[in-house]
Image 1 (cartoon, rainbow, N blue to C red):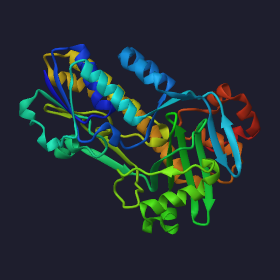
Image 2: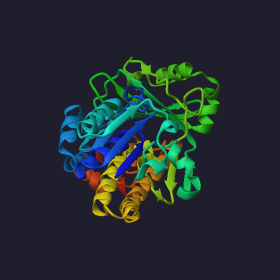
Image 3: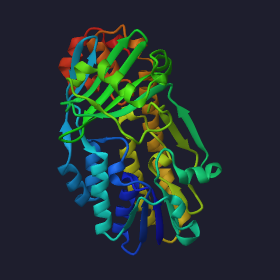
Image 4: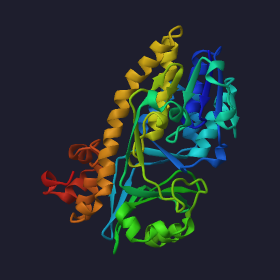
Length: 385
């Protein structure tokens, strides 16, 4: 089978690896508009459970990925001048650019052709291959060319966010909340290598405008955020990324995308091209790579029937993606309404945040961190979920 994979991020490269492993006779070309060092998004987070999945799918790439990981088990939540630490949460971070380089090297070692810095318009047409895999992310060109067939539904957050880096090396996954005369801002931060952390600053649209951020330059916005979270950053700077979208200041709205169909004819979507999950639940790349696993598995299960393979792929993965999107919606709405939770004590606020997506309940938090739950007793039954 001749396969053109448009998009050389983690999803596209991982699919190419697994499909080539399953059938070395596949002729697979991965085309990416950018180079690995141009990667937008800074760091990627995987849970311990996700790492087990990657180990089963491709041990060699798993070994190289985990060798580069920074691992942590705590979550720090800064609220009302206090830092509440929640224990027992296993996560690992890695640079997105490094992950792409690892996966690209693995794909090329298996015989996959990877072409970086190539515009999709220069790629062979669909008539020149048996399957086109759209792995080109949230702003998918592949999806956009067949919008009627894929029927995407887009739901935008009412918050604005700015995705930055920092030389501050956080010891735990960190959330920080600041009340200003304009309203609430929050910071999501995590370390992903020996030198850098990801830092996402988020605030409601009305607060963003009231603070005048819609009129500031990108550099001025970064300086604003540095001042706002100076104590949490411990004097370290925030770092910008030249690949910013939508607004000159770099501030974006998160777009939740859900496609009614993930495949049409000989074209199939994976990862953010088919569905997105809010960054606060840290599942976007995990979902994308699990899509890649199932697509490769479905093609191997139906080598002579492409339609059956693609139908199986969507049937297996769609329910999973919908569940994660629902947790993302709940967490996204929680961050859109931080002011509604401001009456809580720091410990209560921390528990409300940790349970806001619905993935964890108070019993699971008690199992992971009995001391944290003890701090908010006896008000647990009335906790803000």
